[in-house]
Length: 99
Image (cartoon, rainbow, N blue to C red):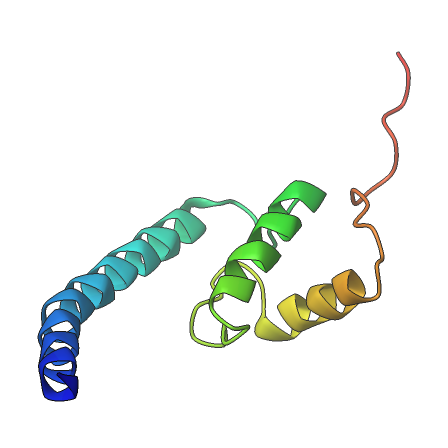
């Protein structure tokens, strides 16, 4: 029975893994294209976007060094430690001025 499960696992990873790798490469290429068209090189994610990146990074077991494209991995790690300490993300910049 164990040999059957092992064979099934090998076959499944053989057919699924290349497709997932191709999807990741496609998404990363799209990100690079979009970054080239953004007038500024600095992207400031909103608090909601930071939380979403942390949630998705947790699903990758925080192994994000090769995956992060819009922020540096060190920035992501800083966000993760802030989140673990219970700090709330605040919007960047100053409040809007009234008319």
